[in-house]
Amino acid sequence: MPSTDDPDARHLPRYLALLWGRADTGPRRGPRPTLTVHDIGRAAVEIADTDGVDAVSMKAVAGRLGLTTMSLYRYVESKDDVVDVMVDTAFGPADPSLTASGTWRERLTAWALSAAELGRRRPWLATIPLRRPPVGPNVLSWTDAGVRAFEQTRLDGQQKLSALLLVDGFVRQHVRQASQMGMLDISDADAAASYETTVAALVGDGHLPNLAAAISDPAMADSDDYFTEELDFGLTVILDGISALVDRTGG
Image (tube, rainbow, N blue to C red; front, side, top):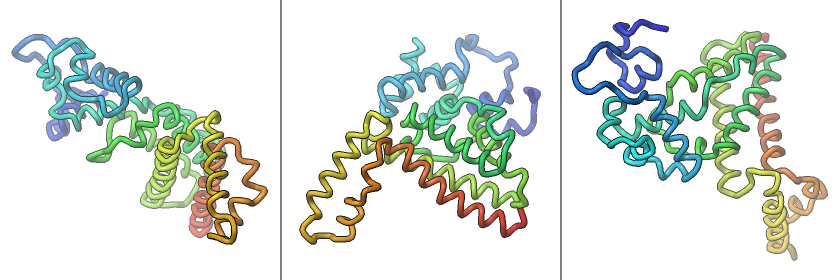
């Protein structure tokens, strides 16, 4: 754990220094703090999980903790800070074994599936508007685990980070789209079937023939879990592309 007099911490926002354990926690004037920045994160996550992310506000978080809104300003300066703390708390630390073994492709697939499962449990993580890249310790532990997936390749640092960003962006978009369309769960397969039936009825009789042919393909009848099947398809295509890059670098 870094010391509390770390000179680099002076340039960090207070909430971030607190998350990383780098804030000055020495004696201060005024009442003794009654909570931690992690308490704020947990309260915000509880609100987002139960009432939706739009219900998260400084006032709502303070109310959940039984405090006044002004009490939060010892730890955060704005709602954006609360959002960053909430996101980091919701992610939690990455499993140290997540990308510890296997080929780079197996490791990256494990990372993507784990991220997708987290998104499936907390879809608001994929829909929440972020004002800045999250850099909390938990979020960056996921980034570190993702980069580790490429340790057996000859990709340079930029290529590793760009490839991970590509996979992460796809997973987030897939979760967001599935959530908006009501297709996050296997039980939502009826929604996908209803969509296909409706489209088939609208594009028949020679109207939009290419779409009609695709929607009537027998392969469409095998789909019973939109979320997983589309996730697997997208990952396969993206990883094939990354594989070509890895091969070009002699990896």
